[in-house]
Length: 538
Image 1 (cartoon, one colour):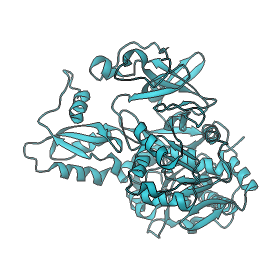
Image 2: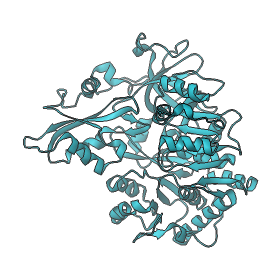
Image 3: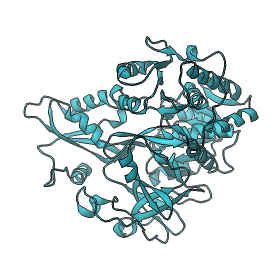
Image 4: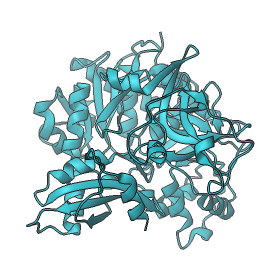
């Protein structure tokens, strides 16, 4: 029997007086953090919440997130992380589907939980930052004594994050203790010399996201380093913190690194302690990589992963890197590029229907990448990236059809379909060139058009709508909505943007809204989104 937190217990024993979490001028030692996690676990038990029960964490990056995360695991529970940008309508499905019995929420977000509580199984709401009617203050929630770690098997679920599928309906991803423990250890070996107890890791990546949670927070707690949570991204503030706190390791998304290099006083900063920087979440422009390295003399490596792979599958390292590549598979992870029926269907057929045949044959490798994509015949060298390994999720929660579509059994192995299109070279470097179907990746976040479209259709002034991703220098892609207004519509494009902003997380709302007379459709009524994307590029 094991538990993801047994690794942390060992770290606590080895580094009891070292700083585990540093935030806003204060520090929690490993002993102090571990004590609070045990008190949180006992408080859950006192309220009848324990082994196998779900606990939602609806917080920005704060010390209480770390305590609640490990406290829930210590009690044998399962974490359901929720984006603090989400509104009530967005968390309702996650809480209802997961059956979460408790939620730890920022005080300002507690009303969203209370709004949907009657339609969920939530019994206990814990408030962080202030007293709120209907919730228990976090400090008051902690028990006077602690609870020992509840044994959980490798295959037991530890975390249930939600990720939207191509339909736009969020799916619960079941990640086991072994999934996350493997990823934490494997990723901790990527920097030169690995993560070390002397490292200071800055938490710019949100903890509700598997990248920030598994790679940065778990990595710090596993290695005995110090985790510096950052509740909200602000480039100058983070850059000052990199200097002042002598941060040694930074993980981020391309938009963050792009913001840093574009600060007017970027050249005045000196990140003398920074020894490793890594970008993931979406494709890293080579121009950003090279400018970052030119400014601060720190190699910026690109990696790759998905929520379903907990998350990291590929990484460039200081010793093995190709610019423009997502890197090589981590040790213990297998990957290949296959000719799948799901891949690049719009490119092949001019529409949204995939070809009928699927043979899962490996696509031939190129000699050495990256290749000139404008000169190459991508149809001949690209395929879908599939993954097999101990980091791959157990399954989607309660969705047998989605699980059947997500995996292919081949040669006695269970391969996960990433939905990403790319190619590989003879040195085992991988290159992602496109996203399958219509998912939009903006600033490292996934946006699924159907969710935005369904909200648009609720507006009285909208007769028809379609959402696509269009190129954006900072975010990689941004969300654009094409709207057919009703004959008597009074709303303006700005009104539509504001309507979406009020009902969706900020990164999901369309930053561009264009009114059109009609949407291009096939004879079967499907919107031809590739035409809209082409128009949006103009």
